[in-house]
Amino acid sequence: MAEEKTTAQVDETTQDAKETKVETQVQDPKEFLENFNWEKYEQGIERVDDSKLQEFETLVAKNFVDTADEEVVEGTVVYLTDREAIIDINAKSEGVISLNEFRYNPDLKVGDKVEVLIDIREDKSGQLVLSHRKARTIMAWDRVNAAHDKEEIVNGFVKCRTKGGMIVDVFGIEAFLPGSQIDVKPIRDYDQYVGKTMEFKVVKINHEFKNVVVSHKALIEADIEEQKKEIIGQLEKGQVLEGVVKNITSYGVFIDLGGVDGLIHITDLSWSRINHPNEVVELDQKLNVVILDFDDNKSRIQLGLKQLEKHPWDALSEEIKVGDKVKGKVVVIADYGAFIEVAEGVEGLIHVSEMSWSTHLRSAQDFVNVGDEVEAVVLTLDREDRKMSLGIKQLTPDPWTDITTKYPVGSKHKGIVRNFTNFGVFVEMEEGIDGLIYISDLSWTKKIKHPSEFVTVGDTLEVEVLELDVEGRKLSLGHKQTTVNPWDKYETEFALDTVHKGAIAEIVDKGATVNFNEDIVAFVPTRHLEKEDGKKLVKGEEADFKIIEFNKEFKRVVASHTAIFREEEQRNVKAAVRKAAANADEAKPTLGDANEALQALKDKMDAAAKKK
Image (cartoon, rainbow, N blue to C red; front, side, top):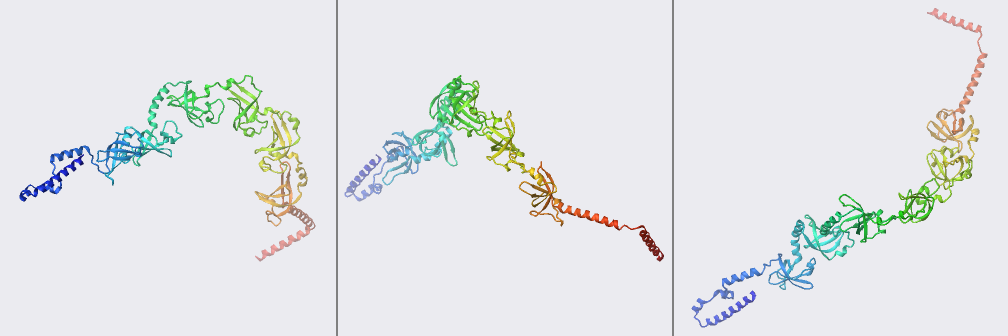
């Protein structure tokens, strides 16, 4: 409008100039120069009154903005297309902004006030270029901080999902929405929120890294908290409520009671034994539960599901009694036994000691597996405490019934080594009958420090029954008794003073050992290792040895090499002594010889005295 007015004034001024030019042709030159409008001639337009110029400037200041570049101003949506929004900022022309910049606000309509940044005052085509996204970015940080300080609710556009949560556009800033802050219940499908505009609360700002964390959960927690207080105030033990399965874990199920969570432990889901709660319930399932207990402030609520049904023990047939045979399914196996479900929710324990007559205890898994159908005998039945013990071995005869007939004292048998201790070996004669071989009854000849030196588990041994205790269920066995005692023969072969040839096997403390055969290992004391030349025997050196000690009971043999030549020396000495004695008897001096000798000695002494 202002432009049209200015153009009209220019045209009118031009026309006046033409008329003036014509007039100058007939006017006096002096008069013409005096009346000529030099400003109009120089500017090409007619001078406007100052009052009119002031009015024009006032209208411009009132209706138009100073459209400086990179400035944020407020505009009004004047028109919407499928792809763009036309924004009026009271400039010479309107600006156009893509609707992509308004994804966070799908409810944008004509007349809404929006903040825009003047990117370019006029592009090549004379169009005003605006940006709402840049304007929001400039103003966003102040708005986010203000929203956080005032705990205001803000709108955000969920752009995409990321590790652990979602990325949300809030005021043009990319904020992080943790998965745990989307809702009060666990979210399994994050993609359902992508592309949606939701309300959030700014819960955390990192000013150093310009990070913003928002929460949708915080908005609904306040309402839930009020609802929770109302529900908690009405809670009573034994009360039955309707809930929704919120979460399933290996130890139980969390139930949403309408803002209040309660836990059904796995043992309170079913009277029957289950391995995992998902065998009974599923997520988002509605079900009735009973309140079993809660703490003082009712923050921990214990719920039950099976309690809404009659206990299976109450429905157990009265005809079942101790000694009856029952059939059931193995539901749980432990090292100490197996639990058998004889009726739905009714279990009995078969202890491992009741699975076999063998006193050699093993793991329950050696006899049964989970899921097996087994038959057992009722051993104990306590309906009040709801306990039942069962046995499998009772289905077969007790092997100790005719033990005296099968294993009389002195009878020989074969058994399998099942275990050994420091003092002996346990041998299984048959299933349910074990016997003990003491370490001293393993060998006639070998000195055994531990049974593992002689046998290994699984070996088959010949044994002889030495003792039998029927009442105590004890069987004493021997292995060496199945063979002849070689020491009866060695007692004669290695009698005292007998001489045997052998080599020094080992040099040991205080002596050495000599192996005369596979059974006889003789000990030679150090002083008995000396040879005739004064040196001692060394390892591997062969020589003759005399037996100087033989103990059959303790299987001890002591030998000596020195005794062989020392005995001969003693015999030679004795012979020499006897010969010397005989010679002495023949050379005894007479009394006359003695007198002559004495006289000669006296004469010698007298002669010596005279010289002095």
